[in-house]
Image (cartoon, rainbow, N blue to C red):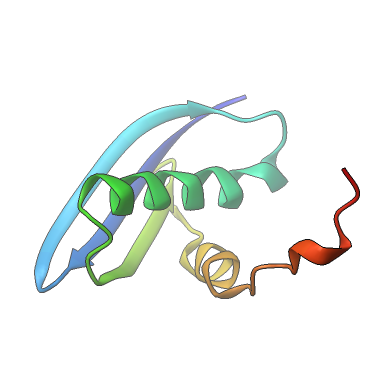
Length: 83
């Protein structure tokens, strides 16, 4: 399924809007893909202080809360990973 995504960010006081059309296998995957877009923008801008203002799907659905939850999740410890 294809969807349109708008990401509104504030990077060290400068507001930024990024738009695009993306593909997801299911609707529940959209917040994670949106977070990956935010992470990519952070990487491109040198990991400056970035605040997520709004994340809009298809021009109407606001998923900002879900994306912020993903962003605030702790990184799991690496000692439990079996190689």
